[in-house]
Each structure stands twice: as C-alpha cells, then as structure tokens.
Image (cartoon, rainbow, N blue to C red):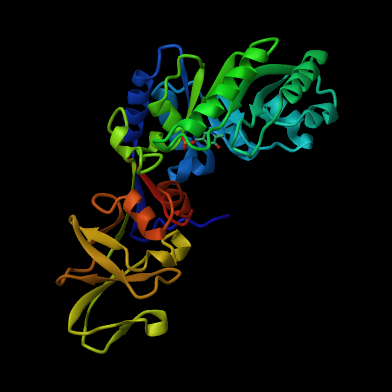
Length: 365
Ligand SMILES: *Cc1c(COP(=O)(O)O)cnc(C)c1O
C-alpha cells in the first residue's frame, strides 16, 4: 500500500469546475451525435481516476477509456456502469473476467480471438486498426476480415466498436494525419457490418478535426485543461482550463552567506548573502531531480530551485525573507505544466503523471 502524506503541507489541488468546463466545451464543439469518452487511464493523468470519472459522467461523458484491465475493474467496483474500454492488451486468461464485468476489450490480433475459449457470456470487442501509429492494431484488410469472420462465427462475441490512433494529430502539418484518416475510413467502408461505435480521435483530433463521420472521441489530456502540444495551442477552438496545481509550503528559511553551499554534491555555492527556503517535496513525490533550476513561485513571483532535488526535500532561493508556512506553487500559474515540461525536456502529460501517490489530492469547486 502506498502511503499518502496527509500530514505534510505538500498537495495537489484539482479544480473540478475546470474539468467540467473542458468537457462541456468539447461537447458543444462536437456534432450532437458524437459521444465523448473520458480517458481516465493512469489515475486520470495524475488527477485521480474515480473523482474525474464522477465529474466526467456528470458533464455528459458517455463512457471511459483506460489502459489496463485493473483500471476498468476499479471503475466497475466503484459502481460506474457506463461503457469502459480497455485500450491496451488484455491477457487471454482475463477475457472472461472482462466479459463478466461488461468491460469492452481491444482486439488487435485474430489469434487472440482464435485462442479464446468459449465464454458463454458476451464479450464486447473493439477492433484496433494500426493505420500508421505502429503500435497496437491489425495492419491489413485481410486481418480485419479475419477478425470479422471470427466474431461472426461465435455467439459470445459482440462487435461493439472499431478504432485507430493518430501519431501526429497534435501537429499543424496534417499530411500524415490525413493518410491515417483515409486508411481508417477505407477499413470502415470495407466492413461487412458497421459496429455501433466508430472512433479515432484523441484530444488533438477531437479539438481540431471534423468528427461527423464518427460516433465518439477519446478525450484525455484536454479534459484536464492541457494542450496536446505547444504547436497547436494557438489554434485550439476554445480556451482550456488547467485543473491541476501542485503546492507546498516553506518549512525552513535561512540566510546563507557567501561561500555556503546547498544540497547533495554542494553543486550550488553562494556568491553573496541570500535567503533560501527548504520545501518538503522531492523526487519521491514526482518532483524529479531534473526540476533543479526550474522556477517555482510565491504569489506569482518566480524563484528558482537551487542545488540538487533530494528524495523528500528541495531548496529554493528567495528574493527576500518569507516566513515558514508560506505557500509555494510548484506547478500552476504562472509556472504551468507546459513550462515544467519544457524545463524537463518532456510533455505536460508526463509532468502530471509523474506526481506520486505520496502527494494527496484535494478537490475544490
Ligand atoms: C491515451 C490515449 C488517448 C488519449 O489521448 P490524449 O492525447 O490524452 O487525448 C486516446 N487514445 C488512445 C489509444 C490512447 O492510448
């Protein structure tokens, strides 16, 4: 069991109203008949899976997408009876469990179906087509036909959906995207029987591309108010509202003299007198060592993390004296997840996913 630090002043704040607004804005943006599936994998990208699932359901999401069967089981356990699709591979031996819980599974290989023993209860299947992502999915018309034939042969399989995933939907240059889309449409047109839910869009495609030909979108990162990429941020159809902020409080303030050093390795040496503060957050909380040099903020004023980030603590340079207990924004306005991502050389998705279970989540609004 992971221990969560409720008795330490380091926490994540999740703004429910912002998640709700992002979903409602996207639903208004979509054609009436297109459903929104809320992608809540990986603990809702660090935002808390069950809390986000409740918000998404209230805001009109038709169902949920997750990466692994355990996430789907947790949703069922919590009482969600909407569609839940596991987008990753489910081992054959757990297909029966998925069927019992009415969890939809992704099929990307006809052999998986051929090896599946008779289940006696219906298993809902979404066929994944690899149109250019090169990850999961069948790669030929013949393979699609084989899966269709296998499903048609059996009483225990329901062909509920077909989908693909785009590799470049978050880029302004759309030629590769168009190629994938064209390929997917051809595959859909080749089907003997059209399943109920044809879906292809992630957040980027759901925001930027027409969805008239489809039944649902898989809305992930932008439900949390983050842009799928910096490149498309200026052309998004509505303003996204980030839901997550990461806070801590100063636990000690000290005055360093010239020549004093800070943290492991003594990599940071004072050149003149200055105030520094120790924060009770470190790499075990997902505030990884690469945050060294990143500018956090107090009351909107930026100040840098100095020296090495430790497992449980780190140190910042203050522009002046602040008392113990002063609130520090690790991620939030103005030092956003996008800025953190740039500093770390990664994407905003990883910034929020990194925050560990040791950090408690507080929900507001
Ligand atoms: C994670 C995931 C999504 C969601 O993508 P976002 O960019 O977060 O909207 C959609 N589809 C698949 C297959 C995924 O793995």
